[in-house]
Image 1 (tube, rainbow, N blue to C red):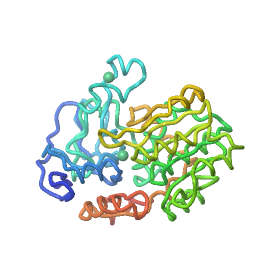
Image 2: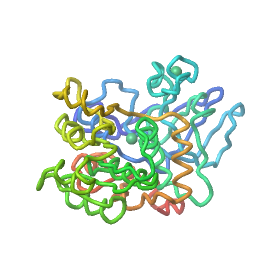
Image 3: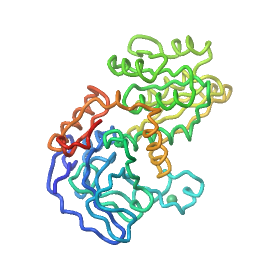
Length: 348
Ligand SMILES: [Zn+2]
Ligand SMILES: [Zn+2]
């Protein structure tokens, strides 16, 4: 079978991988849809030295083989959690599941962008979710990214009536804005630098958009928050400058969530006087646990968040590396790889 390897930095390519063999408690998927996210772009650019690994972790597929000791049967369509916290360490007991030291030890193999994906027993048990009747596999492919957003809202709660600033107009920024609006936030402000992405935010998820290439973020946030700054700020751009601008735009006593992953060694200067006297809170969020996946899937079923404006490109499996380039260029928003582009189940 083939999978999209990241062995060569900057040149993801479809190469042969050994077919997975079913073991006790395991399940094998034939993926139907896999979303591309910035983590895939990052890994494709950097290169992945482990040759047994493919890109892709936002995967939906049809079960083509299931061990009798698993609870699954052939033909079911499922969303797979890409990795799984152990559930029994001190961090898991504190509900801080993405801090689990074993988080990536249990993972789908070789990855989502492969013709066959092996689901290990623990994920088959706790991290697979049946795609409910009426939900397309395309929309279900947004479960993992939306799960990451729900994790961020758990770490940095948004109360009804809170003003929320999202710094970043990419797919995750749009999803956070959508979830904040659904949580009762007002106004939801999306700040970015890409006019077509800001247009998507403005017509679907945000009350206000700010083009930070043209104006000052803090001054404009003040206009919409009675001069105070935003109650809650999510920074969804991978840079210290973006985080600094987010901190500048939070109100005294508000909260800032550093949501975007950043390269090692990224630092910001912190105004300790502001931190001390303005008493704002700051944390980061990353990843998901099975509960976030389950809740995200539930939300997608409810249609209270309409993710279709975020899906802006579809590629065949043959074009999987083009899908990664598309995501890297920030031409649109979310790219999906459809494994059987002619298939009738892919009605998105
Ligand atoms: Zn992702
Ligand atoms: Zn754990």
